Amino acid sequence: MKIAILNDTHAGVRGDMQAMSDYQGRFYKEVFFPYLDENKIDHIIHLGDYFDRRKYVNFATLKANREHFIKPLLERGITMDLILGNHDTYYKSTNDVNSPDLLLFADDNINVIEHPEVKEYDGFNIALVPWINNENYADSVDFLLSANASVCMGHFEIEGALLFPGAVCSHGLDISYLKRFDKVYSGHFHTKSEVKNCRYLGSQMQFTWSDYGDQKYFHIFDTEDQSVLPVPNPLTMFEKVKYDDTKESFEKILNRDYSVYENKFIKVIVVNKDNPYWFDQMMDKLHKANPLHVTVVDDHKHMDLLSDEEIEGVEDTLTILTKYVDSLEIQGEKNQLTSLITSLYNEALDEHNYI
Image 1 (cartoon, rainbow, N blue to C red):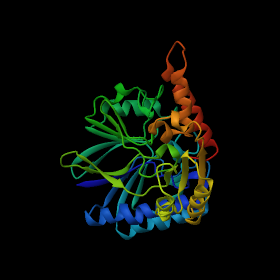
Image 2: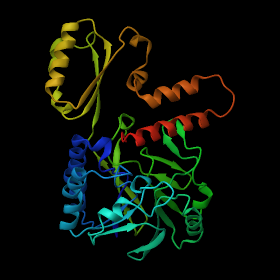
Image 3: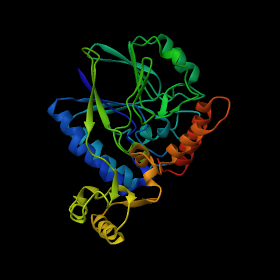
Image 4: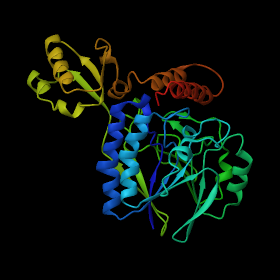
């Protein structure tokens, strides 16, 4: 049996932005469901954070999600086990009040996993574990230590896991509780990574600039050999445009295909701007392509001092912060400081519904 795995789809992400909803709809319509149709896959396991906001769900977002995802799922007779993530729960200390259970209850094809359980798929057992909080911590640990399954899937915050490149989670679940499983697959952190037997699959779509350049995948789990196949999502939301009129002719600059930037977030990295008229013409063509937002990083006087890698990373807030911490001549664990900064940064974004 082959099972499609989704995680961290965050319906309503970035303050219920219409363009993000459209982007998610394109992923389901052009990438995800066509693959399931072609390969005759009729079951999904979702590893949590189905919705983005913990406190409420926008009605327009709910309607769009039903059109983009629920309706085609039901039309195909596809079933889904949906594991609760931290964004799906109203309270931080309990999973009792959660949006999937309250909003998707009428859909018989969807089973919301509110408590740890072992489910059998074509004779193969998989342990399914929702978000672990203060209320369910003891029961969750007991389950992890005794579950009759060799594979575990959940929405875990594991101590020692990669938050994003350069930052490690300094708190969370002790990974020793998961060592009895052959493999653990998790949602929660949006960057792909592995720590011991635990694998973070990463988000399927781009939501913030930290996703730029990170190839996104959904996954197919095969119960026969326990293999996991990553299936790439070619659709992106964030693009960078490097401008250097000392290396490109005016004709080449104007003849770029600017249509690829429609409805995307764009950063224009100005390396050299010797001819302001050329630059203005380029920006005019870019804006006519109807991007969502354009940011110009114009520090060309000092760009010659930076490597290409540093230019690509410029203006990424978390990158700037982590590089600064790394440069400090301080005693103690820099990783702990970086993790604290990252935690506060993500909490602020979450509180203001930016991610």
